[in-house]
Image (cartoon, rainbow, N blue to C red; front, side):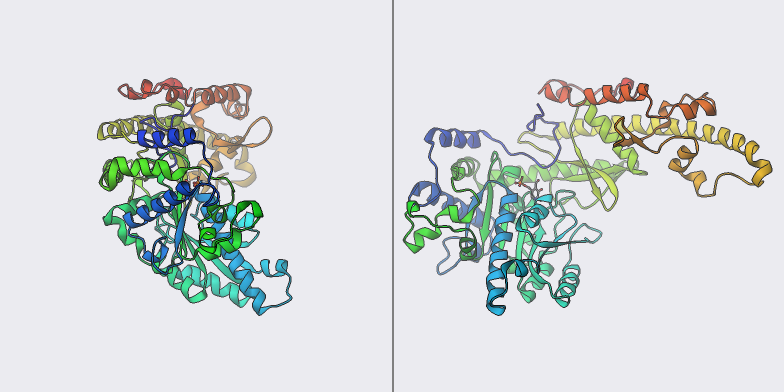
Length: 534
Ligand code: PLP
């Protein structure tokens, strides 16, 4: 079992949980009711609308997105996941655009019109956005981000204008507020201007960082929201609510209902206004859980201030870890720490950080996942639960630095061994080639290339496992005895059976101690065992 509520679980984003949320789930299970139309369960529908209004006002969202705005077309719904929010919004935008195209191109086949549609999002957008484009069967442009991993308006404009010039129909943009890789925020103000000019549906995926909007100091993130057509965030990430719950708002509920409503007599939908509150027409599934009840329990228990405090405490702890990383010149921070996520790495080649993460995860003392930010391999750290504290953060830093010390020492030793082998190889090669070429067998740049020299020495630089699939790890000179002859080195290719056995033992130890909840990981951190590296 991987315990997401373990104090040293720092992977992905937090998976929310709390006693009030559990109570809400218990009551929901006990009531055993199902909502899909207003008439099937008026209380479930109405509480959902009230919660959407509460949270929307807690975040100070534009009133055009809120359900009770007089004369407005806005409103919201609670979906099961952020992925569903993006999908239904993209689907509504697709229906809206195809309906409009049919007016200007009467008689044109839907499939031809569909083949023209293009959706836009950044290289840092979550995989669920690309999945939504796959399901919606639309073309997509995955756009580059700036040096802060943020999508900018000009990049979008260029791509959109290029597509329009070639007869395509841009229709949808997904901007991210808090990317999964580094919690970067796309420039919603600039993107919104382009969307307004070109009549594109702008959806904002705020799955994680959207939670921060309940704190007034993060309201600057709402810049440009006047052009946002839909927005969602996951209270299950950072607001004490257990899975599943993703709150979504739309500027015009009629577009959603037009795209998703299919009527049958047994739904008893004949009054227009009630029909609009039949949430089955806002979602993919028909039958729906009473998710608003746990949200109600959580908000009533903690209050807005309690929830703000929770978010601020994680931001403070992340910034604390950031300051330690910055103060240690072996490490660097990548990206900006604006929320509760720190992306850091060991300076130097990516595989140092990759080895470091492997060691940490295999020890079971903590669990983190990587990200690749413009080719830099980073470790993502996030405080992930309700009782994560300064003391735990200190322990996390000890775990990181203890393993870093070992990785760097191993690296130094391997480099020294490498230098010796290189010298040995050069002598050997020089003797062999002297008469033939009269020069050095190494090109200037190869002298400094780890992979180049390993290849010369007969190592495969990307290992293959026994089935020939590429392995995740590069060969290491750690396994080469210092006094080996060149012939030994060449035979000691890392695909040998002894190497494979070592690898199997390593992966078996993975997460073993993380499963010992509150035991192994809360003990004082010891120097990592040398056996991890054998
Ligand atoms: N969007 C972002 C930015 C995310 O980080 C994630 C998941 O972490 C998702 C979407 C997908 O969320 P869900 O599991 O609710 O579909």
